[in-house]
Image (cartoon, rainbow, N blue to C red; front, side, top):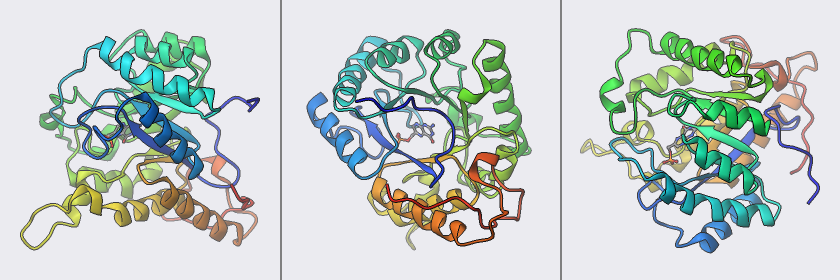
Length: 309
Ligand code: PMM
């Protein structure tokens, strides 16, 4: 398959969509569903067929309170699936905080690294990414899955997340990773309460203002469950958070995000295309996605052409 290299640049036609493929027994939404590498790869192929730009393969649950999986176990879960997908010409990112896992997945054909620790967890990650010359998604988080709940304390969540992510960017650049390899992610649900998640979404422009592409991962998360709780106060079950997820996807596209990371790819691609069509019908002098997010309060039309997938 001779496709050109995957980059962190925006697509010209619509926001990017990453399809979630968790090969874990315990992730909150799709954990334990894909029995063996073959079934997981078949699911990845389906996500690609629905329009995913990348299939994001993860072998360690990041659910709050989750313990660590040994590195060998994470490798054994992720690498065969990445290899099978690469053999079918399907691009993957590897969702890991470990340099050793990232390196093995890149060798097996992954084209990007998605690091929920933003490079904090493993000092060797910057070298792996730099040597591979691949995009690196730096997500904001604090602590680990085991400790993040009690670290959800901010006096200004938007300002602090932007500052903490800028420090991760500085560290990556100092380690020789090129600026155009970086994608930033506010890390919804990671050391955040639902109120923090909504504030970060409402002020996505502040993160975009750092000048890097921005990825949003809201899919089926607990802040949506809390929003949609029944009269008894019980959160809406995970499987019934899809419409709200799609609403956030459309909002992210309007706000100029580079991409979303979702379980239901078709709905996200459809939403991204609909927003792109609205933009394309608008004034031609509006900024393009490549220019980053528009300033706050100016979710104006843009001039990107709309092409079918
Ligand atoms: N969320 C999860 C896992 N990985 N990666 C990025 N970049 N952004 C996220 O928001 C994110 C992530 C947790 O969700 P999951 O258990 O459904 O994968």
